[in-house]
Image (cartoon, rainbow, N blue to C red; front, side, top):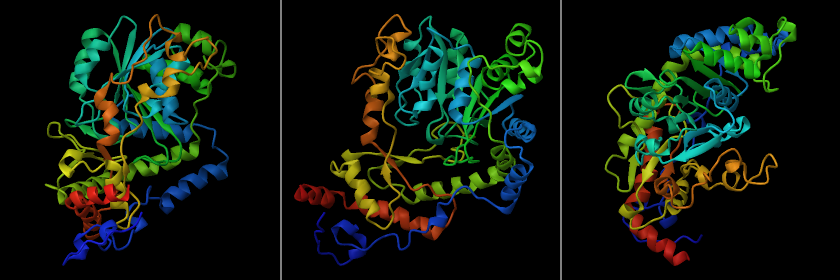
Length: 447
């Protein structure tokens, strides 16, 4: 793209694409580096490697207990990843062939797609335009006699409206599964996300705010859910934990050596991740406070800037964004002369840091896997193969979700609170927003 020069007494106040100087003097990677790995983490992992205990579970059980003490849940079961933990949570609450689960369309696919492995069908719901979490007002109209569970995704760290979701679920005798993969450490009115529903599934992969390699955790206060999750994909622990007579008779009919998972799945976590998790958990609450301070600082610096609003808690006091995974902002092109979010992102990234992006996931209800894929050779799309009706949502059915790609912006994911550096990134956003009208003309001229 050619650069058009605009006369100004203060070239530094113009965006780079209009001839100004970069707002970000040095894109310092240390401001974003994560996770924090110390000699303590390294020793914990190496000890497991040297002992040859990667596939054991003695350290994993200690990690599960410590995670439960942190979260406030009685039963905790580590998995190889968050996708498996959520699958186990679905199976744990009884999701099976012909059932339906209600899940927001604006989320990562692993919040609900694996329900099809159980013969169940995800039904996609609209999201609240501010929180970007599932909108309780739209849940009830989706409930049918087949509905088994609601998936409450705490999207990008923002807690879902759990009081309203739980009220609907309890009244309609439906289970609530919390997907906490974006919100480890987030508080909803003083309660940790993952401790309120019937069960929670939590990703702990390397990119998350609680990052321990490639792992997941199932957390619940319900013994039945816990035992069913073990029976699904933790065969080596069946004899130890499964007490319900009929279930035990199936998965461990004689002794531990005869144990077998119900569905031929293995969900065991590599114990190096458990060892790292134990270390990370000791420091996690303090570390996410710094993330919260850094990102709140960024948004406070942008207060009043046209076209930009923070995606952060608009709930009651005592709610937080936790580790603020994948932080977003609300973008209003109508306040910026119609400047598209894509053009805004390009202009901000030209300021010296390629850390801004168009926000939000692709709407799941419009994806070809959800509409057309015949995964199991049923002669029809898998999405409708297990149901007695066509559950596919047409274009236009979830207008808020479908419009978010043009109205969300991903901001730099600050991990450390460095005021002077953060101010540079905020200034990049401010310069572009304040020059929106000129940028619109610049884009029009370039096309």
